[in-house]
Amino acid sequence: MPSAEIITIGTEILLGEIVDTNARYVARQLRDAGIDVYRKTTVGDNAKRIAQAIQQSLAASIPFPKRLGDPAEFAALAAHIVSNGHLNGEVIRLDGALRMAPR
Image (cartoon, rainbow, N blue to C red; front, side, top):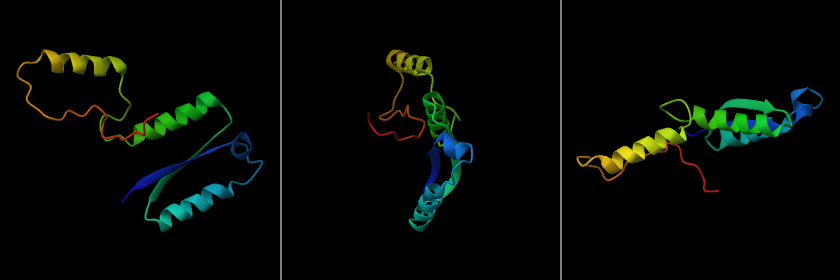
């Protein structure tokens, strides 16, 4: 079953100044579409914290390792692939089983 996390953004929601009815509506729509909502996160109006919440959500969906890759690790793997004369494989995935939309 597909799963999703709902991230709501707004300091007024975080501080309880308004009730978040949108997340409830979205969660029900996702449920009716057969999508399991496993978490709801609320962050304030802070770009750094919003980016952090999105990064944590993406990292949580990666099966192994439970974090996003480090550029140095990708570079080391690419160098090893190029230098290894015995590597036999058609597909080597570097995405940690995560599919991200192009920018």
